[in-house]
Length: 425
Image (cartoon, rainbow, N blue to C red):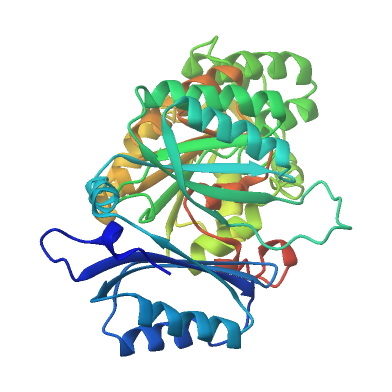
């Protein structure tokens, strides 16, 4: 049992602290039975944690026992035997306990690992970087649903979330190490502060082209106008941050002069939604988030997506149309990088939402200002400049991977598809 002398509080020599570790096949009523028994001995619960992995229970209870612990632990041992459980008692001395209590208030981080499938090598690699930065893993929880072994599809997703504690010398450096590791192992690793805004986001704003949809609309229109290669080259340079966005947009739109308005309808009828977009918006709408499209593209297409996905706000550029054809001009003000950031602030103010509670998602250089003012800025399948500049990025999963960065597990998604089914352990 327990050595009384090693657990004695100098202020109260009749109190002993013991960690009770319980494991075995999970079944209803174990926690209730254990705590009911402990309650009969006037035991205080100092900490408790429970996990179930594939119907196997791991339960830890840190208790403060008044008086001698022998009789209490003997009864707990008998109960564990009756329930066919493994049990272990670990004495905790006051110095160790006081040190543990003193860790309260220390900096905490949330690290999110995303991949199509999570392998042991992934966990080993990220855990090693955690160690190297003097951090400790307090907790690991799976946010993604249960994936059948036979499913090898390209759209599977897996996510585990780590709670880290410690005083890393350089959080930015730690984050960059994880980004580099992600690139090497084809995974995404996001590192965020575990603050009061972490799970209380309220507004999510998206770029449109190459973010909500997997194409650049202006390039599609240019193909129909016979200037596809010329426009696509300018678009790429603008998204890489090599050209002024306003000037490049005017230059590209000018090349569309004379294109029939009916061609806009053709492109709109086949807008390719990004993987995970529909599930993402079903979940955000179900949970009451406000959403916005802030795009350097065109309102004509943004409004179609608004109806399809249930978006609250749409701000984009207006193509001038006269006589059933494009004039080659775009109306002012043009939605460029600064305009996107200003619109995000404006919407947040209108809704009474702090910028810390905002999420912004984009892929191009003209999204960087918007990503930087939001509490959570996510570079999604982004250009190198954007991925390097944004604090968080997703390159391996679909758009619904953003839910994991917001701490939303699959079980909160309103769909019966297994990939978003109940994710309880």
